[in-house]
Amino acid sequence: DGGITQSPKYLFRKEGQNVTLSCEQNLNHDAMYWYRQDPGQGLRLIYYSQIVNDFQKGDIAEGYSVSREKKESFPLTVTSAQKNPTAFYLCASSIGRDPLEQYFGPGTRLTVT
Amino acid sequence: AQSVAQPEDQVNVAEGNPLTVKCTYSVSGNPYLFWYVQYPNRGLQFLLKYITGDNLVKGSYGFEAEFNKSQTSFHLKKPSALVSDSALYFCAVRFFSGGYNKLIFGAGTRLAVHP
Image 1: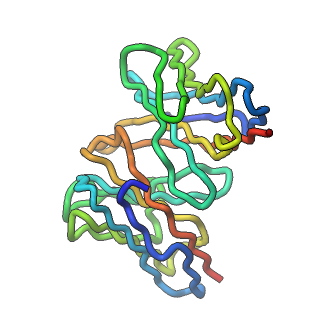
Image 2: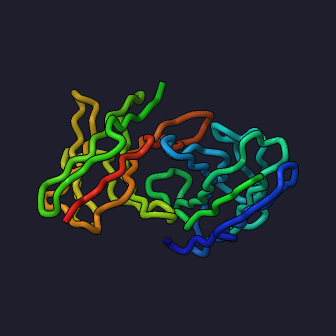
């Protein structure tokens, strides 16, 4: 999975709790991305960051937050404001700021009950 | 509006036969197009991309894709399918929005190769 690690692989939380998903890359890539994958919907962009200390909202940012304090790390927090948080979350990175080839982590499956 | 369509939810192919996974797109300007593959409970892996040049693009694992500008299509092909090719395939297109380049992914097509 290209030098990107995501932890944990499976995560279970009670409704109303915030939860943080980890994403680390050792590829020295500038850009990092968070996607959400639901069955039959493909991947939808939550947040992306092209440089340290800078990030932008994607198409479905509501209920999520991120930080990019280090080049190699881009954690995603799923807050209690996210209405339907149960999904498969994928982190990715790309060499430059243009996503010509993205490298994906193995994903975290979050289940909220 | 930018979009990517994968019209088939699933494609079934016998091992050894040629396979095609279809993708059509809608984007302003010259398209940058991609194919990714996802094996169960894993992240996506890059297969190939089209940016410019030859309309037939060769990628990993013997896959290739044909860019057709008039039909706005970018179908993924392989001359002889393997059982191990069974996976979920995503087509994607790059577009520019809000000052940045981003990818839109199709909904995915599940490829099932039968022995």
